[in-house]
Image 1 (cartoon, rainbow, N blue to C red):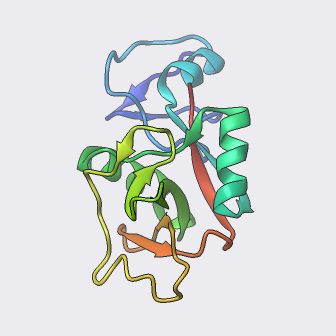
Image 2 (spheres, rainbow, N blue to C red):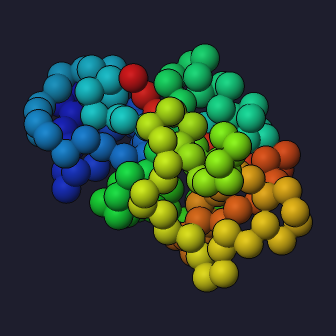
Image 3 (cartoon, rainbow, N blue to C red):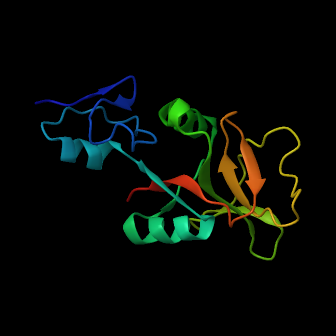
Amino acid sequence: MIFFPVLGYCLDASCSRDLIFIRDEPKTWFESPDLLAQYYCRYRLINGALTWYEAQTFCRVKYTDLATVNNMDDENKLVATLGSHVAHAWIGLRKGGGTGRWMWSDGSGIAHFTNWGDGEPNNVEGNEWCAEMSEKETWNDLSCGETKVFPCSKP
C-alpha cells in the first residue's frame, strides 16, 4: 500500500487524529505508514488531558516538547488538523523566566508571533501563566493547573 501527502496533509491512519501538521517539503511517496509518519508528522496530538507541566514532561520524555507555533502558517496547519474534535489544547507557551514575557517551552525564546484572542492575555484569575489554543482559533491564557489535551513536537 502506498501512502502520500495531499495538499500538505497526511492521508495515513497512523497519523490521522494524532497529526498536527505536516512538513511541506519534500513531498515523497512512501510504501510504509511508519516511514510516512516519521517523515511527515511533525507533531502528535495526545488525547489524554494533563496539566501544562505534566504535558510538557510527557512531551519531553516521549517526543521533544510541547508544540511551538512560530508563524501564521504553523497556526493554520495546527487549526486545520485539530479540526472540530478538539476545542482546547495546550501549546508550549508560558509566561515566566522572571521576565514576565511569554516564552516557548522548547527553549527557542520569547514568542515573537502570537495569536491571542480579544482581550488576551488577561490573567483574569491572577495565575494564568500558560497558553492554550481555543476553538476560536486564537490563544488564551489560563492556569497551568487546568487539564487539556496537547500536541507534542516530534524529533
